[in-house]
Length: 222
Image (cartoon, rainbow, N blue to C red; front, side, top):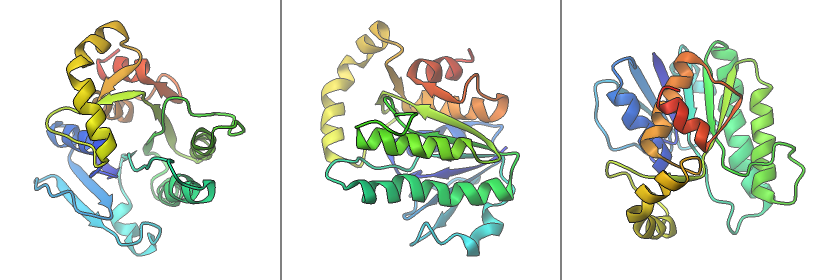
């Protein structure tokens, strides 16, 4: 299997990249982003772009893949809706539309978020924009699956690039085993996310949008 990862330097993307590199069934990984991952692996190739919207010169590199794991995203805190929409909607749909044309048989998984507004009409700005993004992806002519995780526990030395989140994980990490036991449908890990994405790419998804509990079950082979 040949896969593309968008956002491989972020917390979720790091987890997905790790699982892809460890998986013997993954032949090639193309990491696309504004900065290099800093990793070296025989399966890993990188496409570092100053402008992630300017994809026309890179169609040959992007063609011929079986899956795209889109892990690129930002917090909406302090952003206008127009600015958040450009990064969340426009920056996702630009490669998605191209990939749907280049490789219509591929699976495209998009990391959305718990609480996404599927109607795209609610009051919460980020949830509305995420919902609009999901709907646009589901309308494209490839297999699209939305991932809506809640709390994500980073594992294997993976960290968030956001200072506030790092502080939050420092507090919550010791409690994760308890949270996982008491509320398994509310928490997941970077490892489970990566494994679930690979499983969906191989076997398909039980539904178009996977919540946290669904992600954990798919990752476990359920």
